[in-house]
Amino acid sequence: MSTENVQNTRKDALLRDLHGALVEITVAMNRPQRDEELLEEAGVSLDKALFKLLVAVERLGPVSIVELAERMGLDHSTVSRQIGKLESLGLVARQPSETDRRVREAVLTQAGRATTDKIDKARQRMARELFETWEDKDVVTLVRLMSRFAEAFREHPRSGSR
Amino acid sequence: MSTENVQNTRKDALLRDLHGALVEITVAMNRPQRDEELLEEAGVSLDKALFKLLVAVERLGPVSIVELAERMGLDHSTVSRQIGKLESLGLVARQPSETDRRVREAVLTQAGRATTDKIDKARQRMARELFETWEDKDVVTLVRLMSRFAEAFREHPRSGSR
DNA sequence: TTATTTTACGTGCATAATACACGTAACTGA
DNA sequence: TCAGTTACGTGTATTATGCACGTAAAATAA
Image 1: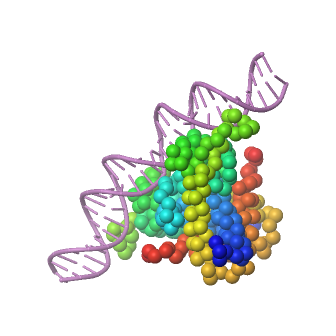
Image 2: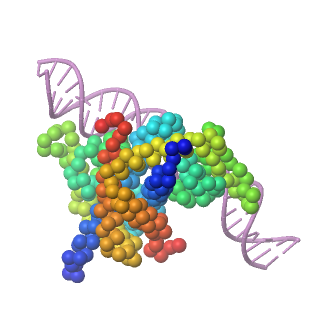
């Protein structure tokens, strides 16, 4: 308090704004409404949780259940069940790993690929629309800084652990 | 496919990276681990869902249940119950609105304010640490562009509705 | 090699967050 | 005044999720 100065206050306000933006973005990303809209635009019918996992499988290629769980911040049992559902829907297949017979890698099936293609295209359309009024320069900068932030946030130098 | 050109591909890749960063940030924000760490650092014991709502009440000041629900992307019944819990913990109070006797505004109690102060300070400390190696200029730019994006994303020009 | 520990996965079980449906009170506008 | 809308709370059902446990395979130690 006694050592508080103007610079600190300014920076605090800045970081406070950042947190506000982060919360807003997180809420927007978590809105079921948003998923539905995207799925509808893509002409795909899929459950919210399954949808996120399907996209993750697309991004991470052949990927083990455990790694998928870590990436998604979920328990492996949850992912195991959800992948099971995606499998029964014919969108994902489990294949034994070549190098480790404990792991069963999740991969997209042809139908799964077709689905994620539609979703990706719908997302691209919406993103283009959102950035329509932005200067290219700003978009590039946003992506650069936000990617950098995402990585730092993920690696998040935890107080003591890890 | 036949009309695809290099410019489109470049921009698509950019937007794809953006989405990747968004997903990573969302996952990081949703990690229960993160909340725990923050709460521990703040020396506060509180449930995950309640914690988010408490922070929301701090930000949005005296706020109705319905507005809170809309901001959080939750059903009003969920928020009603959670505010009830926060009330029984003595962190939030419900006060009748001056202008509309249907609404019961949620506000922080003194204890609630003390709690959010601790949380805010802990978050500031962590944020400062994360941006330690960043140039001020980049932080300022990140916050500016990300705030702009958050607003655009929230207002999200829905296909037809709204 | 053999034995011990760790890892990956799946399943039974319990919990808790959440949405939906409904009822009540209050506000709004014709 | 009266019909329609809105804000809120509660009963109920769903379901996503984590935890605990067991099994098989791999890694490591002995």
